[in-house]
Image (cartoon, rainbow, N blue to C red; front, side, top):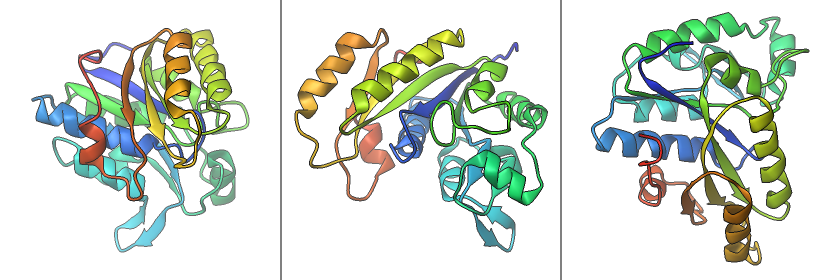
Length: 228
């Protein structure tokens, strides 16, 4: 898929590892560097009813951190109420996830952006239909991947398995971010050093634990020069 803008798919070693925090932080840093940066969350479960329709807090944050306002439906084409696996939410809502609609929304946004940040839902292989998973979005859009590693026990295994799967899909791992999500995690520095030695891609930053996630604080700890 030929696009004038650069596109990055933000995935994580699991759900709740800080993908939205990092995606939002990247958008802010890119904006402040003069880039037209737009965020997109193609699929979101765990949405709330509003007067305007179903809305997801993560997608709204990406919309807020984007360089220009765009209709919510372009930012988040598939929104589901229950906070469950996307393919189950889609089945319950009788609204299957259609990759062609995601591609169409992406193309519209990409035409107005220098950089497009696309955040996945769940982990790299979270199912979106009975035969496709989240990685198929990145593959279809031909996006480079940024991996958010949630720093907790087991993160080395989860990170390396995800990296192997990204490579198996033939996609470029543009970088990874170490995000501290467990304040009791022992040997954090040693684990980050191990990740750096084992992952053949640049570390874009190490984000310390935050009781209340703060996009600005996280952004100050990230480096984007590998993405430009």
